Amino acid sequence: MASGERLPLVVGPDHLPVSTPNHWMLFLRRPQVQAGTLADEMRTVAHVHEWAVRRSIDPFGQGLRQSSEPRLLANSP
Image 1 (cartoon, rainbow, N blue to C red):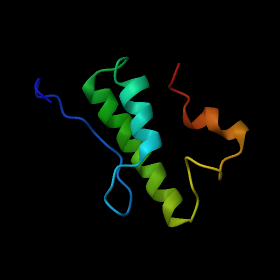
Image 2: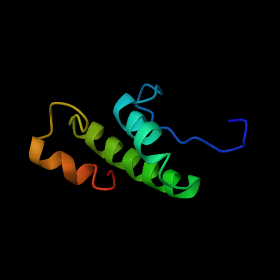
Image 3: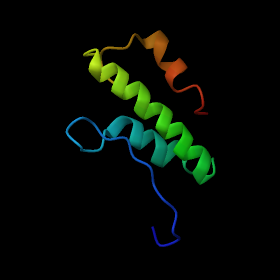
């Protein structure tokens, strides 16, 4: 970015950005938190994503029950 800010992204096993967590980060979290907090949160999301992929779970799709989604996004408004 022009300001020198680094933008953390979650990438999948194919080395392409994963849309759901990155969309959440860009449009919901980035305006609310500082860069360091954002990097820490995205690191956590990336670990959850990696854990789920290794177990053949889609953490951001049909694999979640509706009642479990708010716990994943507990930091969002």
